[in-house]
Image 1 (cartoon, protein in one colour):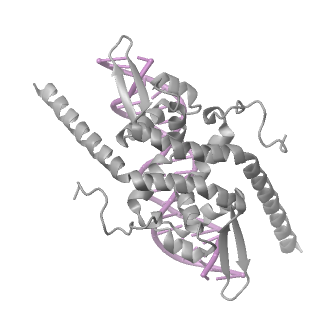
Image 2 (cartoon, rainbow over the protein chains, first blue to last red; image 1 turned 60 degrees about the vertical axis):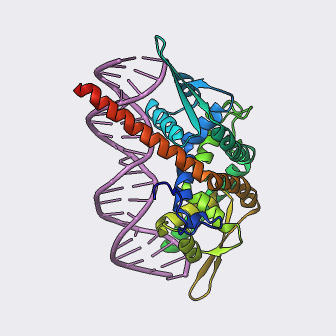
Image 3 (cartoon, rainbow over the protein chains, first blue to last red; image 1 turned 180 degrees about the vertical axis):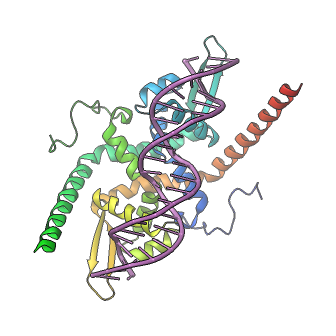
Length: 142
Length: 142
DNA sequence: CAGAATCCCCCCGGATACTG
DNA sequence: CAGTATCCGGGGGGATTCTG
């Protein structure tokens, strides 16, 4: 049962993520904010821990460690330890990771090339919201 | 300053998400687990709140509401209220949402078609981990 | 340098109850 | 039906300290 990683009766014959807890969970895991950013940074080739920490702005060393471990566990990142002094560790995308990087990059590219539209939509939504609240108050007072 | 939604000096000329907090944040927001699943479900056309709640298995009505609001704010989902009795509300992808659905589907499809490999990698990683821990204990005892 | 471990706070998100 | 409002526990994740 453990060998059959994906049960036949979990409603996942057709591609329906909502009925497929396995895929949903993996999507949530791999689609994680830090994971995406780390994958991005590793596209250019192997990088050391400290490099990643420097380049993935805002990540704590704790989260970087946890993220890399999870990615390693998922088989998309390979961890190589060099027993030098001081020690150094390299992280790189596996073949699986390389192929995974493609949709990730596609997603990132989309957001990048549409962030202006998104921001505009947000601004409009927020001001619209403001107006509605203002009207509400007028009604209550009136 | 508010009109210039994306500052020129935040290091985002080239596509480097790690130096681009705006894109990072949007990626984290839109790449959210529930958002991805909801987007998936809306690809087929407009759906009502209760339909979505039924189909996106495991989501609470609270999270569905919050997710839909956020997606609406980001401009990828349009909300239409029908003042019938009982009232009904329809959600559908905007043009922006339609184009966003493409990379999302690509991501989902990748995970779907690779979930077996991922699961295998996880199993191997876990058993490897187990072995290491076992050795550690032997060393301590020995 | 590359982590592991610990503490601790915040907020995500579920459960429940109430409205139009 | 499609929400909002409130309460609340668990865990995500930061800051700090300690090792090999």
